[in-house]
Image 1 (spheres, rainbow, N blue to C red):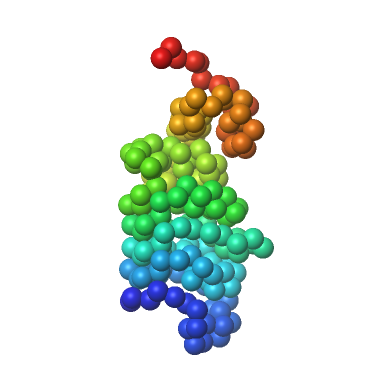
Image 2: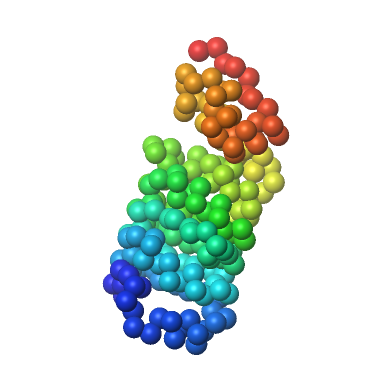
Length: 184
């Protein structure tokens, strides 16, 4: 379609009124690059599935006030989303259970398996990531991976300092404990 913005689209408010029960919206294969251009979609209060595959999104930013609060599936595969802040922003979607982000440069050099584990640990309500079911054992392993990854990535910072700076890490360490110190 080539759309890159919803701002200034004549008739968007009437469309919101005409389709108040809209649950699925697919805007794949467009040119959206800035999440703020999609904010008018928050007006669809019944929106459950938001599909934004193959756009040019570089980040995700969810405003407060319950915007997109009913979304259970977000598909934003094959965009340009690179910052982990975008994943953290998804914590504002209380009903999000399915997430598709494959094909984005999210990993910072990590492979798809590591990114999947970090997504699962970061967003506890997820039941499906990139089309694959999240099983309870995988969630536990993902949470332990998050702990190891956070500590290893921040070396030589002591784990105690990290716990103060990262609420998720603090919560996961309270559940699983710190990993054994390896001799290296």
